[in-house]
Length: 83
Image (cartoon, rainbow, N blue to C red):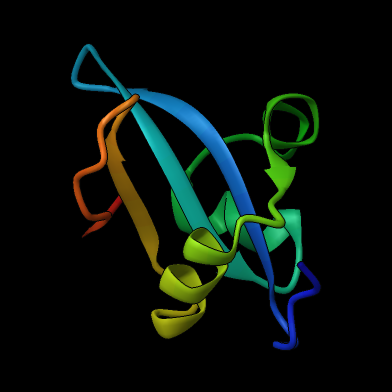
């Protein structure tokens, strides 16, 4: 599904406090995602992708430039965290 917003929605996994999380961020670039998440741009380029998942796009674009996470493989809602 094509994202109608100017920001791209990036999706990836991260380990936070020893636990695996799915993460999404709506931002114009990987560089900006790096600033928001504290993850290196090289890590994002290798392990994160621009998502086409409608649910993720809708969730992330409702809270632009916010680091949203949920436990890996859960259907829990995403929650905002700071890096």
